[in-house]
Amino acid sequence: MKKHLLLASAFLLSFPASIRAQTTWVKTKEELLFTTPPFQQCHASTLVEETGGNLLVAYFGGPYEGSKEVNIWLTTISKAGSVSQPRSVADGVVSDTLRYPTWNPVLFKAREGKLFLFYKVGPNPREWWGMVKTSADEGQTWSTPRRLPAGVLGPIKNKPVQLANGTILAPSSIEEKTERWKVHLEKSTDLGQTWQIIPVDNASTFDVIQPSILVYPGNRLQILCRSKQGSVVQAWSTDGGNTWGALSKTSLLNPNSGTDAVTLKDGSQLLVYNPDVPGKDWFNGRSKLRVAQSKDGQTWRDVAVLENGTKEEYSYPAIIQTRDGRVHITYTYDRKNIKHVVLQAK
Image (cartoon, rainbow, N blue to C red; front, side):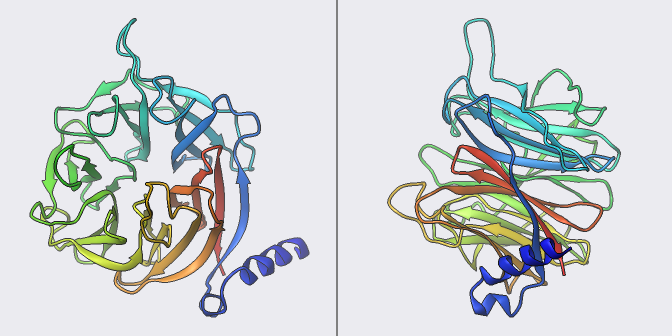
């Protein structure tokens, strides 16, 4: 107990005074998942809770991002805390003579029990296509990979949500060669068998990708997006995601880096983000990582500092709340590892 109190106290003192006064979360665990990984680099983690309380964490790994040798890997964190060795669960092999990189896995478990692994295959993010595998045994075995229909990419980085009526909404986006980045939603009412594309403010001048979805009472939904414009960008729906209003800036900074968010059991929202503005290169602004909380999606306050580096890359977070109320976050740790952090409400 004394050790945990000292850990919590040290964590709280790492905040600026203005944040400490409002803190409602403490960090109860942080760990790097790999000691001797079978790849040189890894990125873009995603996580989901199994029925028994174990966590599955997927990510892509290989010599470097964009290499045709990059696979999708899976690690299990047991309820007791042990971490399994990475195992490859998907690749970009098309034929005996053709292979592409894999990208951005997304794990999602429907209420009906079906576990999905979405991922992308292709030479780059402008030409990739969506793939999906499913599992009926908590990720021990996976179905044959299936290519999603033309124009459907699947959730591009962040997890889908399943609404009360069973509808699955997957947050997606495209990175076009000659036009701006655009976000959209992909909707399924039959557990992922078919998908309908829902546009979001196609007339906007914002360059936005990689949305996450937050849920509010009264069929209200919010998406929060990565942007090139220096801010996390939002849009709102008042009809359960069937139509969306205009994109607009939030008060949160964004250096053109991925974020993720989750609606908690108490109805509030948590967002993991890099609190900086874009630099000269795409990787600038990714050395600091924070968690912000909001009750209404409009006013946000930082409640946790995950990283406070200088030139490192701490990026592409994924966040979920497990059945026990704890919040689990994974993110890229300088491209060499995946870090797992657990937050507990005070």
